[in-house]
Amino acid sequence: MAITSAGAGSGLDLEGIIASSVAAKKAQLQSPVLIKQDTNKVMLSGLGQLKSAVTKFTDVMAKLSEPGAFNKRIINITQSKDDPILKVEGKADAANGQYNITVNQLAQSSRQEGVFDSATTPLFSEDGELSFTAGDKAFKVKVKAGDTLQSLRKSINSHGDNFGLTANIVNTANGKAKLVIDSGVSGDGNDLKITGSNDSINNGFVNQLTQTQAAQDAMIDVDGVKLKSDSNTFDDTIQGLKITVLRTSDTTSSGDLKSNKVDISTDKSTLVTQAQSFIDSYNELQDTLTALGKRSTMVDGKKQDDGGALEGDATTRLISSFLSNTLMAPSTQSESFSTLFEVGINMDKNGKLSLDKKKFEEKVDTNFDQVVALFGGEQGLAKNLQDGLKDYTKSGGLLAQRTDELNSVQRRLSQQDADNNVVLQKYEASLRAQYGGLDALLVKMNQSLNYLYTIQTNSN
View (cartoon, rainbow, N blue to C red):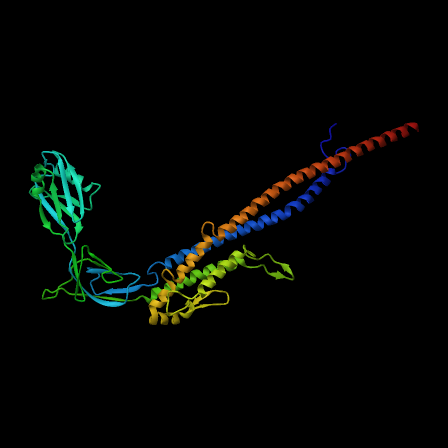
């Protein structure tokens, strides 16, 4: 009979001995690997959390370093809110001031109109082209004999080179069709010109049109200085301001145009809000760095394993060091303040920031531009933090390199685990061979003893 398991012949629990031996060997080989794998997984998770936190912080810094993010202005205009005359927007380089602005006229495009028998009556007796020109803009439309006002309107409006010109048909009370063509191009000297390539086109269409509105500039008066624009927008005519005129100014009882007062002042509340946003984002990142890098406590000389996911890893310390060094570095933009600690921002022993609002507002009141320069702009604190931290989060940066290192370790540990399984299989096979031989020997010994016992019994 074949022996199916160790000890089957001798009756000894050799399977239990083999299982215990293999389990002990497995613990010896695999326990260190499992501990390292678990530690590695925790660190990889910690790096993911760190990258997410740094990215969130740099996103906030990117918004704060945009032009004008800190340099906000309050703009008040004396005009009706329901029927405004103009709109004024401040840019990054806007300055406080007061202006009296009068809107003399709006910019307008030129317009041509013509009345025809109907929208479906043929206009042309032969093929050709219509040319449309307004200022330096132009395009041509091909027409065919038999084209109507409807088909011409569609060809004009859908043409790929159309520069914004529109053609519309209005049905009149007497049953005729009026075509209205607006160039869409405003400004002095940009009147719409329409020409045909042959007499059929000119006689049947072009000569039926009359200019009903000339192109003109917008005109405003700023504190007695007359300004013109070929559109209804005056961008940087007053440095740092974008003025959009919506209608002409109201008139006095004598018919004179009234001016509208525009007052531009510092938006202190927004600057305080932005500074607090900077502080909150910074502190949130510091909290993450502290939690991830926290070291395990010791109780009676025994480690409690209550540390952070990146305990002992240098990454959190490097980023914390960069943050503090950047905050301490003298500003290259602000001539009045070297660091933010001079304008009412404090740091505690844990590296957390706080805002002394009263002191901050005092600095803003007395030196607004220099406080703005400290935080904002291309060389401001927000931009410096954003750019510096990108070196950590970018492809190939420190966090990516550290992640690659840990993934490489994880692969080596997985291979080591596989190699250990092969060792265990060989070890078990060796034990089975040894105990199998022992089992067979014991079977033979038992058989010999039984034989001797039988002989002795028979001889008696």
